[in-house]
Image (tube, rainbow, N blue to C red; front, top):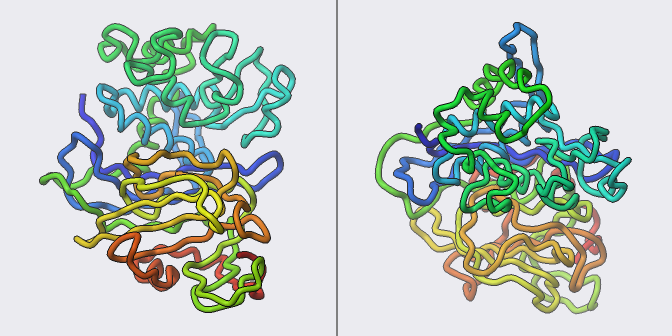
Length: 379
């Protein structure tokens, strides 16, 4: 079994019922315990055509591929999964939900308020792998999280199931089984023969969304920089520089750039790094501070105004470029939901610089929404 190296993927999200699908560009990351070469950047395609074992044509859209990317990312970070285990997981999710995050509003009405791609109705099954709360897979809210579902499917010592129900790594000698039999061992479906037909589709997804990095020594730094919000979800509302704060009325340096977005929009780490601090911080409200080593130099990025309950990391966590670390909110001195992004070359105590040209120079832009609104729309 070989483990994927230097995986470059894209995660897909929906902002809620009736919302438009969005995709999150992620860059390759050097994963702990692996010998990785240069960082490789690769975006997910907007669609992918593949063929099942039965010869049926399948077209996957960016949202489905985004969920596949989440499964790949989670599996690649777990010892013992490797390419074979990821193929099994993709086969299972393709079969169970066609790689869609399905709510189940008839049994669990609360799932309608959580990000989803459609509504399922198979008993009390939820999500990508159609896992059942009543079978012990997790709460409805937990199972509406693609990352949680992927971790549950893989199971093992780091999984949330603790061996019951059994994830893939909890199946003795799972890697000696046919991939379809391994998927069935986890899913325990009444229709075990369905999984095999999606094996070539799973392999095609894996080939399309991943790039092995060249062999070489461990890299303690990164050159990968991504935009901190998903494409098409934001509007640039305020620049770096001196201005009158729309909340306090005080003229001072606005040490970052503001990007208005819907509450709950994922906030992404702009580069690999280590979380320094999280939590309330004066006018910034709920914030996250991450330290990076980029091209040999220390850079700290700060993400402000996250919503209550919208911080997904803790101090000391290692994060990857493009990993969701929080959610857009309007805490602190804020006139509406937005992300306030600061960039501090040299460290947190060093002077901030304008994030916009810094991101642009790194190629981390989303030019479809570079529209500056009148000053004062956000703080």
